[in-house]
Picture: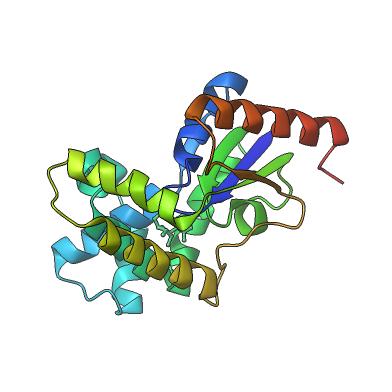
Length: 212
Ligand code: C5P
């Protein structure tokens, strides 16, 4: 069984993905980490983020063990991720890794932006997790403040808007809700309620038999 969880930044998709992978006993891949790690590694190596071949080379030799979680979670890492994610050669370099994970015999759950549309269009259940940008901004802002940042809420919301726009308008694999995905809007939901709704949506997709 493959579960695809896509959605916007700070929508709660990561939390939902973790909880669903435990619920269904499926290995989980947070595909955003691949793009974050590529962006961070390129910055460290002094490779310009618009150097398509240079960044693709970084993506091809990526070892996730080289990164600690805190370095990948910064606002800078998120921005760099969304810039390098718009480069087709980078997406190509990371495709096989994700595809192999998705098709392992015991099944898998992946979260990202293009899982239901590009990486695993045959997924048995697809969710698109979203929330109003102001709500997402506040969540992300609190997280960043907790890490010691003094960034303003307005700046965070503006950065999310820019990121959404870049992710949704890129030519290659734009972040998009698959036609057969179920929308989970977490704006007015607690984490528990959002997780419950997501489990119910997956159950419904499995019952209806997403795989045509
Ligand atoms: O989900 P997360 O915020 O960690 O993703 C960081 C960035 O990586 C996104 O803004 C997006 O540009 C890119 N990404 C992507 N495709 C995925 C996962 C992430 O383009 N499957």
